[in-house]
Image 1 (tube, helix red, strand yellow):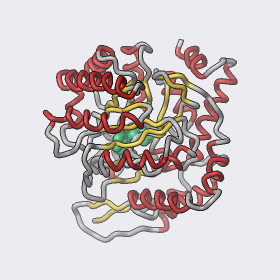
Image 2 (cartoon, rainbow, N blue to C red):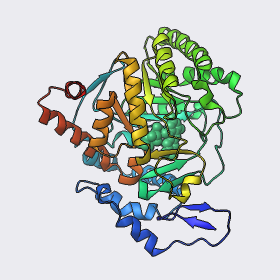
Image 3 (cartoon, rainbow, N blue to C red):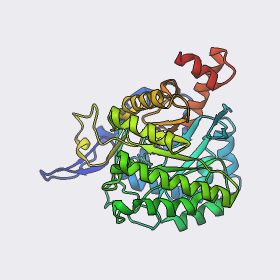
Image 4 (tube, rainbow, N blue to C red):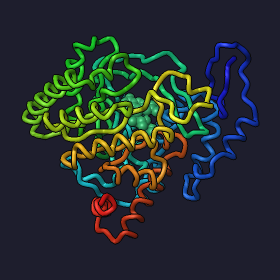
Amino acid sequence: MILFDSIGVRTRRADGGNPSLTARSILRYHSAPTELYTARENKLYKLLRPLLFLLDAETGHQLTFLLLRGLYRIPGFPWLVRSIYARRTPRLPVEAMGMRFPNPLGLAAGLDKNAERARPLSDFGFGWIELGTVTPRPQPGNPRPRLFRLPRQAALINRMGFNNLGVERFVENLRRQGRPCLIGVNIGKNKDTPLDRATEDYLTALRAVYPYADYIAVNISSPNTPGLRALQTAENLDELLRALKSEQTALAQAHRRYAPLALKIAPDLDDEQIAGIARLVLEHGFDAVIATNTTVTRPGLEQEPLAQEAGGLSGRPLKALSTEVIRKLHRHLQGKIPIIGAGGVESAEDAWEKLVAGADLVQIYSALIYRGPGVVRCIVEGLKRRVEDSGAASLAEAVARARR
Ligand SMILES: Cc1cc2nc3c(=O)[nH]c(=O)nc-3n(C[C@H](O)[C@H](O)[C@H](O)COP(=O)(O)O)c2cc1C
């Protein structure tokens, strides 16, 4: 049978049958959890979302990007977006990796893999955006469907498989758009590169993106590239981090600019692995850790047919798991290098939880799909209010007090 989840994402089941998208199932979503809706939420997205959600998730994503491209050609439209989102997003600066982030909320990797929409995304009011994952050579990724919405859980499952146009096009796109805000570039290896040559892929990508990135995120944690997460084991990681650090040193000299390196890790690591990774990033002088990528586990999704889809789970069900990894990582890193927290952040409360657990900055992806760009202002405003209410002079000070 072909099943639709409550908003019409198709998935195949072995027992055959017909596709059916019922009015009841659409209604069920739109009368669902009220916390998904806030008074401040952007009205345009509220109108757009039901239409987008009638489409397959990836088609909806592509259509949104096309729409943005078209609208950004209209004179005055970028200004309008900036004045709705960016100008109303409070400044809540955070110092990390030797940079000053205007606010602690960033866009997580994966939404703009080819750096095609850096400018519009920066206009949503993020403190910075992370683009990619980009691989040295172009690759198509896994066959579709490969992205699934689970609206009852405000979650997504994806097995995109680093579909991207390759690092050459990525750099061209980025160069054309200038640098609209702080930009992290997330790099990975090609699917057909054997694991014992993975380092070469990372080095190729690092060299190509270095001049255009404010930091480079090394992704060894996507569950959708076979074998990739094996790079998280101590002996593989040691070699990879050593090679990347040495190349970064050479690039910093050549370009007379130091671009920090961050390592992005999975949420599905045991305590020993987390401790090992923490030791190695410090040993090799990495500048930050991003915790976490999507999970291969399915917490709380026992009743959800789509949970059987292969891929990484993100959004609300990932929240507790990623916060726990942040907490453990923080215990080992002890603030020596910053942690960028990601996983199920939908509100200022969620972001605060991650900060108190040990994160210095926070990223979102899934919440943007469910709540639209208005969620950025909502989260940053909420955090700012917390700082003001606490009487602290900065976010860092408010968080430090709450951690005691
Ligand atoms: C559709 C999709 C594609 C993603 N692609 C990437 C990627 O290319 N590289 C990466 O490092 N993380 C990728 N991620 C993971 C996110 O960057 C983020 O770590 C994860 O989704 C947890 O955040 P969230 O719960 O706010 O979505 C992807 C996530 C989703 C939902």
